[in-house]
Length: 319
Image 1: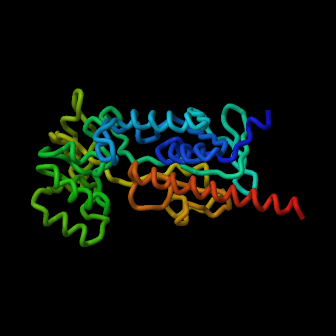
Image 2: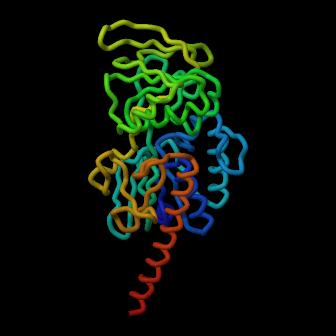
Image 3: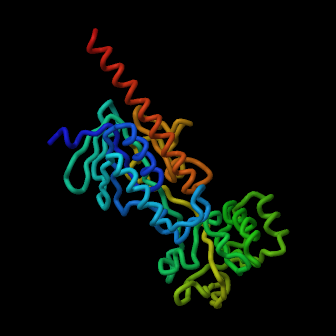
């Protein structure tokens, strides 16, 4: 039974980064296990349409995830979804992971791809209209709102920069922010204020999203006066921060002040034999394509690490 639970590499997370790593590792004939606490595909499956993946004109996030899963499985990669990590040991030459099903698996290397999630407002209707008018990614979904009137929520650099970017598509962008001032660099604020397509609703917050099949309006409350108004909109982009799914890695590996995994150019982490990729690492841009790139690099680096480890072990035996 022990041999069945021993792998060359264990990948934690089955989003685009994890699946890509699984494809490369398994194709290199390395025994690979991918585990995920949710469904295969990660945040990608929430995207109704992906129209900027090179070589693919248009595909749903779910379809792309299933293709990646099929590819990984075809090369021999084992995939376990809907299972949580309850124990993790990343130090030393042998890594181990215990899952909620009670089984413990060991490996020579680990690739961390737990992904992350955008901060949400947590108000009525938000979950209902995700992908149906509510988005957390301008690059992914901006084109779908060509000649539409939209809202951008947030007051940091990301919110203002994305608001300006969205004016390439939308006929009008209204920024809704809870404070009377922005938490962004002055040049970003100035660029947004100079853009004639952008309006501002300050000291206010959205308290509800409304619509039928798609988002049609939002309820906005003025935090100074308490007055609630209904605002018609074709879409809302929310940029109030990002949360990496790294809570289970605290005190186990180097994280930055935002909880992101610190990696080098080869995706190696602070622990030997442990790599990380995708939305959970410290980086600026988070796209399916960048996750795939990270996963590729991490898999190749892990493969190289395992080969070097085998050589060292053979040399020690021969001494």
